Image (cartoon, rainbow, N blue to C red; front, side, top):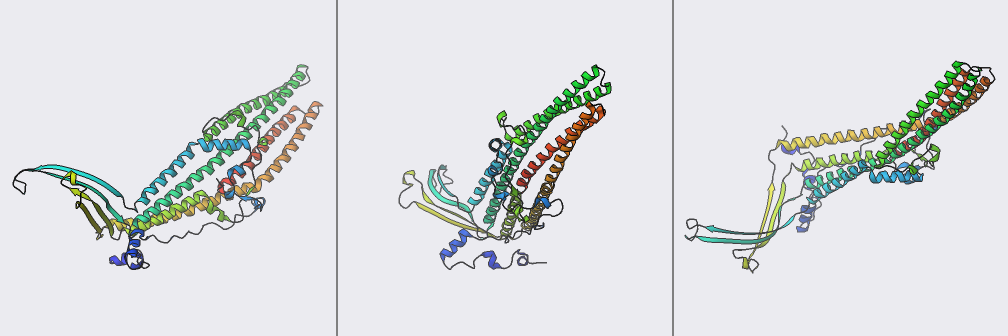
Length: 486
């Protein structure tokens, strides 16, 4: 069975008492009493469990770093979002959004808790005035006769101040500080997510409104075609099946318009929720082309940039907090030294309370030495496990961040090619529709070919709008996953 000395969770008494660097004499003793030491293990950042470079391959060839691009973490959102109306919308969201407000209040709470814990390092000075008047019966009086006893006092002193000789309070203070810093990083992460979400919702509204405009213009063309076929049908030139086919296309586009009207209304509702208030119509976009392009950003050459993400920094601060908590658990295995001292004046007569010779003082140091308490060793084991849990969570946050950036880069590397192919498809289908309409007008082909070309063109145009939105949304996502600056 191990002795108590063998179970001490750190080597040597020199580190435990932190006396090696003290100068002899009273000054050195006071430095030791007031400054103390810490028994927390030395912190070292765990190695990042991800590759040093971003993924490579066919999906990433077109997403190579742009040398002149500003790193996302150094780019304020006002510079990244160049559109003036979008900036105004984001400003309103940062002012009114409730999630961000809750995050800010959590930071204020954590900062106040850190202040409370830090104050434990210093003595609390109290002034107390008291007075008692009591009657002592004859059989209890030392004089054998009843008497009235009076006592008055005014004291200034320190009550049960724990001198942080082994760093228990200092370690708890460090833990509170790291928890406060982690909360502040969580607030910054919430702000970045909010900015990205507002920009994404704003662009989604623009894309859906553009799609709605496309559907309305398509409906006008379909209704004009239907009227022409109706006239031809009335004079016996067109068949009824051609008329019904034209009517079916008109009805399909009408249904699509109703769906898009619903979607754009829901987009506005989502944007208003993020902003925290209803936005005026003049701030809302009409099409994607109305929005100024975003500033170009790059992921850089190394994945080390992930260490600057707010969620990763928050995880590291929580790891440091767990590391400091080990120091507090270690210090609990050593004696606790506390001090109570008082100085003041006392008298049996209120009029002589502040007279000469009425001064009193008391000096009462106390030391408590743990002999046997199995809870302290179990608590120490808990802190070690909590630190390992924090290490795993920190490593997982880095791996998650790497995966998010890699996914965004995969989209970035392919979306331009997809837009180019889709643009070519739109042009080809538009020409097909023109030729099919000419052939039908000359009676060479049936209206079915025209109808099929119309549907294909409408679908291709919708796909092109969706891809243009995906390209812009991908830039916003890259800004977010790289920890864009606040």
